[in-house]
Image (cartoon, rainbow, N blue to C red; front, side):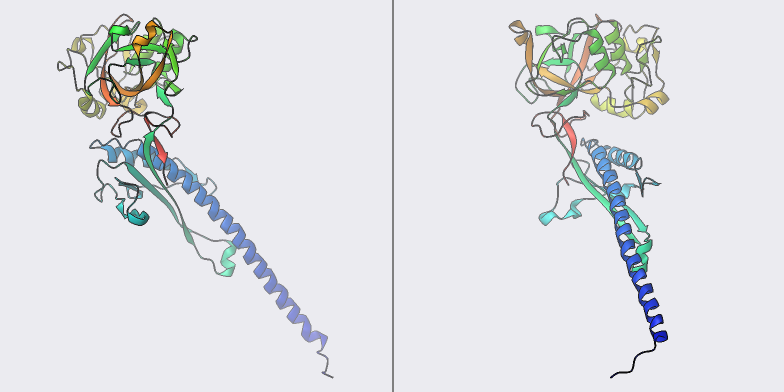
Length: 407
């Protein structure tokens, strides 16, 4: 028989085993806790990367400053997000945003994505946002040797036709087949504000929800975003007469506001980035005003230049927003999506189906509901280079372009 080990020699072994077990359990618990924390931070970063890519993609219209605008939009939206249990802001810089003209290279190679500083093409149609939180320290998991790690989120977005759109209540009268429906980009089209152009004009004011609605509904759409649930084949009806309430809502997009309760105001009905008006007096060419509108009008946040310069009869009751107001409150409010309709169809039916969507530039404010309104036809809203911004459900074929995640 082997001699028995004295009990006093066993007591220390049990204590060591218990201590080691506790350390292992703490380490395993730490791994679970820290992995959960990493997952949450990664989810927060992914949400920020998604928002960054979608916002940047909306600016990819092929113009010379598109990448700069895309970078600014992506950074602005990404940095509004918080991470690490909402305790710290997301950090995003221009180096985190890259562009490409194709979704990916051979075999999914992402080296085709370049930063603007690295030579990305201005006509890029895809944007990749990669956001990182480096040096995320471990807590209890450090017991088992885990060290600080980096967490990242990545998203790729582009623009694609929507099933629905945010459109103003103005139907462009179809003159020909899609995609431009008989119009030439840069062409000015005219109609009366009070009842549109009718069958002989270029557009008509429309009711998206016939037979309900009326002037107050249309005024609300002009002061707001427009109707955002229309789709091709939606039946729409004529709206009738546009009155002063609708005129005030229209003019708010040019930074012109009247006092009084219920009227659109700067903080509730934002203007465009510029109120500069294009009329036969201020723009004698009466075509192709879009380049000037984008720059220098928008980039300089130009205000409405006054009746003497435009030949309009805008009431003195209106106050014009200042350049700083346009810069602070401005949004994309004059490059708008408009539905295309067969105006002749109203001869035989109170409603007509929507044919498609186009992009138009609102050229000038109006003095009274009876005034003639001119707009510039920009092109199909489905054109990849369309500068019209909208929101809607992706997955359409001829709807206006909306940003969508593709990776």
